[in-house]
Image (spheres, rainbow, N blue to C red):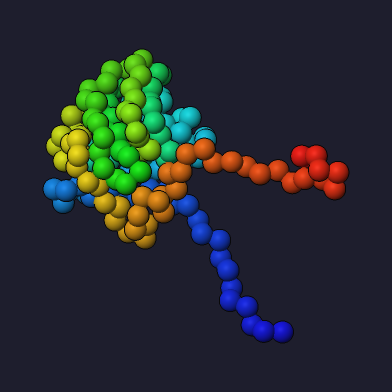
Length: 152
């Protein structure tokens, strides 16, 4: 039997580093599972300057059950900032048309870090493209079919 290369499953990262056009880097926790997206920043007392949480995928956000205002950076599938909504207080909603990702930052941080509309963001590290991050929408889970052709 021929030797097979060992296959180790690729683990999804829990954090990434985003680099703005200005060269400033921001460490972002990933909200790339249902549980992480559901909890987000709810119940936290704040978010350290220079860090954020990136929702994958994301099109809109809410600040229900949050204790502090945030900036929301809406990013398309290519890593271009579509819109920035600054200083969103608790108990509000925000969205961006054509958005694949949403980055939440502490209030007033988006401008300081260089996240402005039309800015091009890069992912530093192992993930080289926004597609690698897994920002596809409409992921479909296929079910096995039985011999009779019924989904089961």
